[in-house]
Image (cartoon, rainbow, N blue to C red):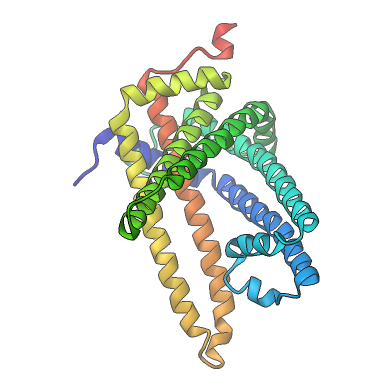
Length: 323
């Protein structure tokens, strides 16, 4: 079924503007990789503490990846309160520092894309020329840095609200899990429902977070004013926003499925003598393609939402207009 004109053009414009400002995709990819690497540091340190205090094999800890190693390391450290406290402090420091870094980078990215979307011509309408797409580029390090500095404080306050929302969702989920059940089948069904509810709630919170970031950048307003504008935007354009969200989510899901299939195929190749030597560069290449693709899809959706917001007539009074 064909998409309605407004979301379709918004997605097309978002893809073209993002492609013209490909530097932002690269910066976001590097920032995410750096944040992941920083998060691995306390995990490796925690593994070292576990090895020193309990004698566990570090290969066993990391056999299933860093994400699964985190709860394993924490569980092993429960028997050693001082080591556990040091591990948790390290994780909190890395998460806070990484969140500040990501907020700064995201502010620069949103500022550049907002300017590019505003000043780009009707590139989503045919005919499509490479020169027209190139002219939509507005990236420069100075512009990205200036935009990041201007949005950093408000993005940090918004990020605090995001963490509070996550905490509320997890608290409600934990409260629901503590409620007694009437049997194993009912407990399994209840856990499945709670898990699905948490996924949906987190997804909606992330969407609200992204839209609020867009409004802050476009209207140059504070967080509470942006939330009011976002509420009006959601009420007036639920269909268009839902379509963009559904398309972006579907593409991400398809990309994830393709990535899992590629990983499984490369895993089989790794067991073949000599031929398996090519698995490592292929895995690195697949990781790079997946990272760039997901960043491109996310920023395309961001620009699409931004376009819908600009043409919706829901914009609040900016700081410049108020002056």
